[in-house]
Image (cartoon, rainbow over all chains, first blue to last red; front, side, top):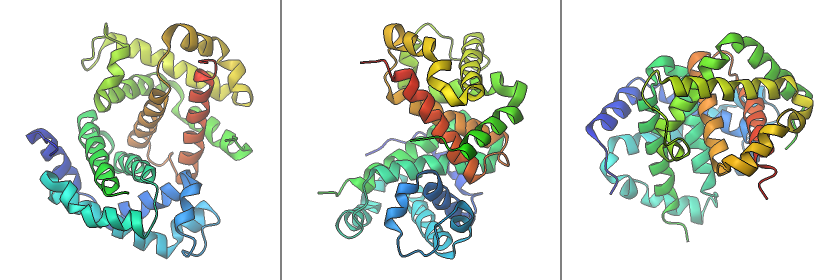
Length: 147
Length: 142
């Protein structure tokens, strides 16, 4: 079980409380597809991904980004059992979606950059530490059931 | 991985915009990296890691200068950073994985200071550039 200090929990909660899940989720997924274009391989049925502008404006990207970040919220709510929280999702990503777990790490880092851009100075180094830890734990939990 | 003409233009524009703040960004990048990834401190056992550390400021300045130099010679990053590449291969031998961590923290610094500058397209170009710099610095490792 991952240990979270009181300070880490507070830093995570205080940022999460101010996150617009729809906007941040959409932005994070769009940036993933733009910065690491090979990740588009999982979204061949999403329509027009032909340019950064197309990706940012793509309604399926926005919707899926919101879905992904909403799910992330489950980790924030269950910091003491992230493994259990993502058990089924891990199986799904392995067995049905066939997503290389490296993508979870890439998305996690993109999310940190998106948070930094939204929160500026408030996204302090201590904040970044807590969030890097969180995205790492989530990535690990999502990869855990792979076989 | 190749830097396109628009990648190069984006990177040059970023460093022009950052201007004199590059040194400050360099120091903050290191500070964030040491805190987010404590294992990176192992290369600097003699450093004062506290806020406002003179050593971090001074080293941040060096790191920033190297990035600026690479951006100014973006058509030949390997040539521009050749001596630094030798240094990292023969003396410093920083594990290659750490250049990714440094690059990531630099993006976080730019994002937090100047979010409008880091559009998705610029983010992609800058990420590619930072990867290219890391590749050059580790090119002679073996």
